[in-house]
Image (cartoon, rainbow, N blue to C red; front, side, top):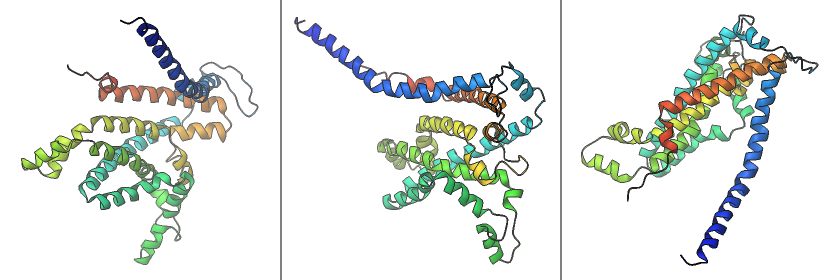
Length: 308
């Protein structure tokens, strides 16, 4: 090895480390500041009885005892609402996102692009506009969009938000998530080598057979990532429920995240609201681990093995 090579390698290694710190440092700082610090503060507040006066009176696990010991009669209903909301919304998002991707990739290029653009529009609409659009469409009076359609056929108005509140909030958030899932799945399908599908066509396979036996199995990792992403999104989201139904009628659509928000910022029970949110943090971590293990996440992040 030439004498100048060793110092050069050391200098290059040092430069790589400094570049790594330069690019990752600011991101790490802001993640720590806006993610980990709030979690720690929330955890501390959850063990207090903080209310309107913002006094930090330590009460131990009293908030959690109230939550799970029967002191709050609304908790069982909130848990059931959350399970229904997540279990109903996740298949809508993943299923329709995958279906739209498969259908649009089968169309002519221009038609497929137009089709995907239409379904991507909800992603660029402001959340407040999207929420009020659904609330107006399902307004229970004769001025609601769907009731105006029914009136045109001579039917009576329907109190949509009273009779079907959970279904409406599931569809509103589900179709919003379809756009992102569709975008990811479409990109993944476009990256599949065309030789695979051409060989299947030569063997006489139909498009749906190719989807079942070739395309969908090759989308395992995009499906896993979108499942984790939208699972966390549904568990933590409450904005559209708040805008469309406000959690009603009579807590019929109030999920865990919304209940924590209203407890803290409407009833000013900051300590109890923080304890509700801490439970949500733990549930998020557990569900992430379960889904990650179910899809074999270690293989996704494992180094690529290249045979010589």
